[in-house]
Amino acid sequence: MQQEILKELIEVIKNNLEDIKVEDVRIGLFYTGVKLKNGFAGLAFTPRGEANKATCCSQTYQKMPKAGTLTNMSLYEALELSRSFNPILRAVGIATLNAASQSLISHYPITSLDPLDLIEVRKEDTITMIGAFPSYIRRLKGRVKELFVYDFKLEALKELGLKEPNLNFEEALKRSSIIIATGSIFVTQTEDFIIRNSKAREFILVGPTASMLPDPLFKRGVTCIGGIRVKDPDRMLRIISEAGGSKALLESCSERYTIRRT
Image (cartoon, rainbow, N blue to C red; front, side):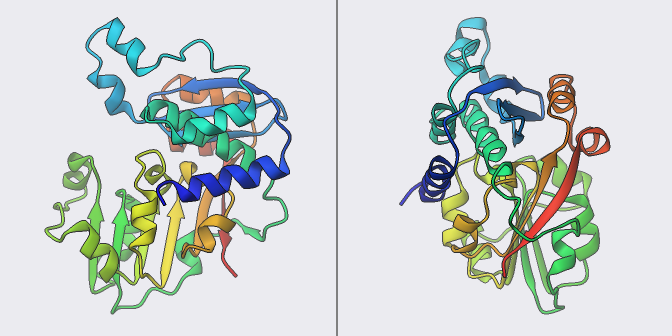
């Protein structure tokens, strides 16, 4: 069923967290951020392409009809935006989901180690990477049988000396023994397709957008989640409002964490 993972995540949050208010929402150039009234905050990838398609103010309004009304929404209302047809509103919903998740993950075994350090990589492995992670590419290139990197930004692949894979995406997923995906697959609504077609021994979901409750993902084959915890929500909101990215967030207001399926 489409969006079944999001439906379960929302249900778990509603069963464990009261319907508090959203205190602040920022839609930045690289990340969208949400701060809840309970002090927790979350992030999600901003789908900038949608805003770029708007050529005038009236079209911009069509892309963001809720502008000016997002702050002070209820948590439950904001969570439902994660399933919106509007990609920018989906980012707000995913950031809300991540903020709520952070208030519920304290009992999980959390480590500061990188997800890639927690799995075994074999020379006979075929790896599919969804989103170009330069540090991972440097670590894996030449160490495994095959490495397929898919990224909607083709210029990012060129900068890394890579070409667009000539293998069908679905076939690459089914062939791979390891899959590494950015959490932005939830914003692009490809998470169900990707996870459903995975037969991988290890499936790493990583990045600020992946900072969500792990159980609905673990039971569907994800084995490791690498997210970030926002330590200073107000600082985070200012950084993303000033077009800051992951580096600025990690340097001043956030920290990485990993949860491994047991």
